Image (cartoon, rainbow over all chains, first blue to last red; front, side, top):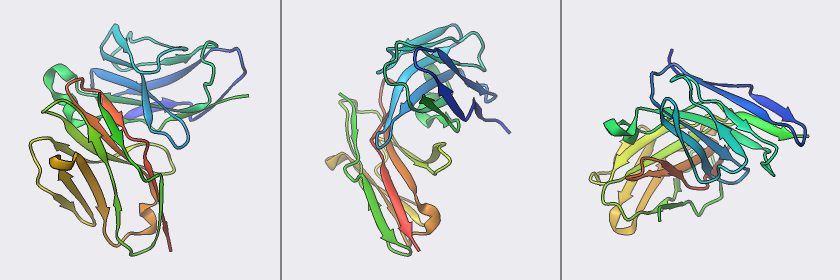
Length: 117
Length: 113
């Protein structure tokens, strides 16, 4: 079955450390996205990528970095510059916008819960 | 600017009651898409419905129904005869010409037996 795999499900990080969240999809989608969810809040866009080797900042990109070297993979690094990284992180993918396919919405992974200890 | 407002933070009902989740959106675009997603305790978002701005027909899917009214910029979601399995956080989202999904803050629904 096609889908999006996020790993690990739970992640603990010490203050001052960088940590990388994995996101892999086998849906053959070109576009991928990272969202952050805080308790009682909606999802906020961190970064997105419409095509391999290209990505754009979302609304809250500070303290995060991404890479898109392969179509299937869009890892997110939470750097030490992110002041409040404890949150639930969701990865999503979609058919690329230039085909209009994104209007059909996104497919989401099951998320990674990051806690700073 | 694009914005989605879900004013109801949390709703609690007893099983078999009907419940309506409100969603109000803002966009300057004439072409846009509206979505509802369900987030069960497991965390992943489950797609429920997509609506484009040119289709104001109400939609019914089993116990779920959606009321889209452009005049009031609302896209409300009703669950008829609620069940305990309906307990989740529900998100309304907007996609306009930017093709980015913009989410509301979500409504937590608790259905008590």
